[in-house]
Length: 369
Image 1 (tube, rainbow, N blue to C red):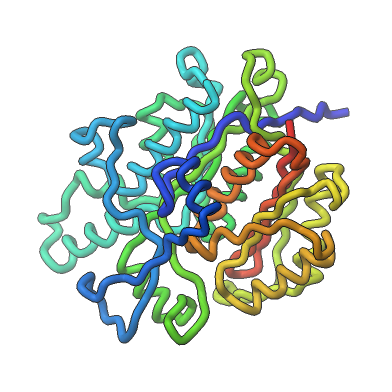
Image 2: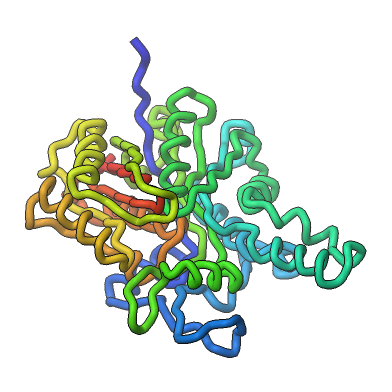
C-alpha cells in the first residue's frame, strides 16, 4: 500500500495591492480596506466610462534584491522574487545544500503581458531591428518562476500553470503530488500576475469587468506563495508549521470558456469532495475563503453551496471583492488561510474555494498542523 505523506505549510508571503507583505495585507483586510480604485483616464485607451482595478502602484524590490539588479526584470518577476525570498525566510528554509530538493510552481493569468505588448509594438510599429533582445525573455508566462529560481538557486521542479483564476490552486494541487512522490522536499507554490492596460481593455470589451453601472470583477496583480514541505523532513529540521495540507478536489462544469456560470449543487459536490479527501466533517471548518468576486449569479451560487454544506453559521472571507480577481488573488487567499491557522489556535481547518471562467473549480482544505 502506498505511503501517505504528511504535507505541511511552513511559510507564506505576499506582494499584493494591499501591501508588500502578508501581515500588512491581513491587517488592512481586518480594517475593512479595499485596494480597488478607479483607473485614471490619463492612462489612455479607448475607454468610454469609468473602470476599476486593484494595483500595487510604485514598487521596490529592496531589500530582497538591489534596485540596480531588479531594473532589468519585468514587473511580475520582481513581485515573484520578493515574495519567494520572503516565503523561504519565513519558513526558515536553507537553500544551501537543498537546491535540488527545492521546487517552484506558480500559476498565472497575465505574467509576461507588458513585456509581450512592448515587444510586439517594437516589432510592428517600429521595426524588427528595434525589438529589444533584453525584453524578449520576459514575454513568456514562465519568466517569474524561472527568474525566482535563478536568483534563489532553486534547482528542483519548475512549473508554470496558465489557467486564469484557479491557476494558483492548481499549482498547489500539482505541488502536492510532487511532494507526495518525493520529487522534492519543499516546493514554493502560488501565483503571480501583473496588471496591463491592453489586457484591461480586452476584458472591458468582453463586458465582464465592473463599471459604475454594471456588476463584474476587477483585475488584480501581485504574487502570493506558500511553502509546502514533506512533513517528516520539516519536523526533522525543527520547522514550525503554519498549517497542514489536508485535502483538495478539482472539478469541471460544462460551460463555455467565456462563461462564468455555476450551479450550487455542483459547487457543493466539489467542496464535499475536498472535505472527504481531508477526512474532515464540515463542522471542523472554522473559516472559508470564498471565490466571490462581484459576478452576482456566480457569487449567489457559491453562497448557496456553502450554506448547504456548512449551514448558515459560517465565517466567510470574500477577499476578491477588495483585492480583485486573478490567480494571484486565489494564492493570496491560500496564504491568508495558512496565516489564520497559525495565528488562531482552535480554528480547526480552513477551506479555500476558487471558481474559474470555463467552469473549473478547485477547493483546498488546510488544517491545524
